Image (cartoon, rainbow, N blue to C red; front, side):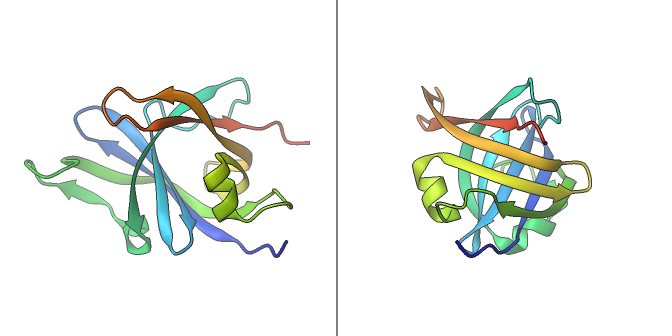
Length: 140
């Protein structure tokens, strides 16, 4: 499989409740998940990841305040950013996303090393979407 680094960004989002938006560049868009407690660097932690709408690549640089009355109103800051590589040799990122089994190596300012994003059986009450878990893998 041909490997090519892509970008990721984690935006700290003080909306109705504080959460972190974890975004991966896949096929020219940012696939996004809201992480209520934020990403962890501890392999013992499993962080809930609720899928949100895709964003354009330009959004990876957004910092500022989304005005009251608009969807996602609140302050957004970049918490971390960098690149990532697909560490699954058997499938593309598109296929990994479709399967719900993403394994990546992050090279960010705060997040470094291997992570898994795994789709689970549960669904969010609000969005009725399937939930995922973000897990820091043990690095060798």
